[in-house]
Length: 470
Image 1 (tube, rainbow, N blue to C red):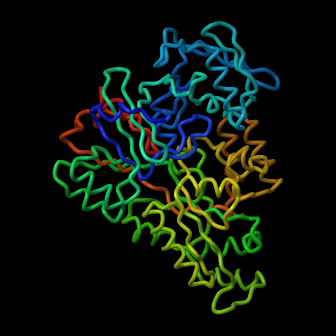
Image 2: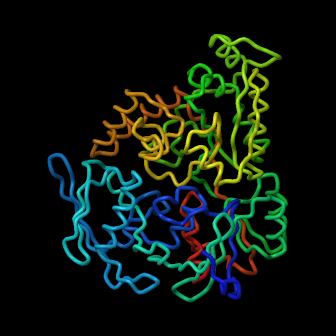
Image 3: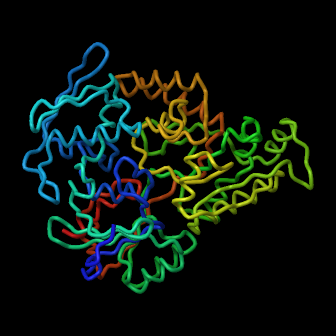
């Protein structure tokens, strides 16, 4: 999508991230970069607040009726809500959006959504405390470029930038990806970028902090940087090998030396801010233990190495720094690593297809424990989910199913704790650290008083920009 007249508009605010979305089609907007922009373009039935709780967005009111084997949400939509192109946001649009997400294996706990009036819906869901989390999805018209949210798409250059225009006051917002750390910081210093969202490189944090007319906010986050191991690989299919890799990595030292302390150790694939978090990964740095496990796995060294693995990652400099650091630990225990950086769209395509041995990525926007099913259940192999490591454990699947059937969150928490223990014991995912949200802004363009009043959703959400442009 390219608008020849887009670039004559003044940019009131320019936000930069490490990369830009490759798609803005809501059901496929799974990357951190796409997810953040889509939530500006489209409103949702329910939205996640700063406490990671679902709350009404397009919903005016609702009630819940519990049946024997399911539950029913009766939902009334807000009236007189229109898209950028003037279409009425009504029940039919919600149902259409729901069906699009269902086509891609999303919204699993919602069985059906029925229209019972222009602005009234009957939503039949699984009898689970999780069902309301599945109602946090964007509502969009057939022409998905037509917005239902606060910002209209003016121009979109996949992988580079998105130009948005506020429906409230006509002010424009440029969201762009600047992959090179030095370039991004220099543009920020010159004033060509007004806000950096989770894109201040740790090794340049103190430099950015020292700049004139610049302020930085750091907050606890929910995004997890992790390593994924392909269980279809002949070496990585062995549990002891995966555990050896986990033991071989000094995660605390990586946080200290590579992140300059701007992260926290996390021991699950659920963020520590979550009510459901389990401190489950008992893998303290132990290279001797790693060597013992590798030797017990039956491999012998050749030219100093047990075997060689290829590691795919994005071209983001910080991601490559972390990969190099981890690789150095693996090489110390006899695992040769070849690092293979790729442009994000190619990288993401490869991991979805299982065309990798090791990859590293960030798990973003985690607000529900249902992420465990999405990344590890045997029914979640791509394209139905994000189990890209091809982890298959029938007992894990059973525990997840039991957790999902709980109406009470406290009872579900015990099952999810056990599921996290199983997943960490399998070591198909290695959570390296939980990154902090870092927002740097230029005070001559962004009001500090507005920043202080803004609500920040953990995970690098751009929703606070609404307050800035107001």
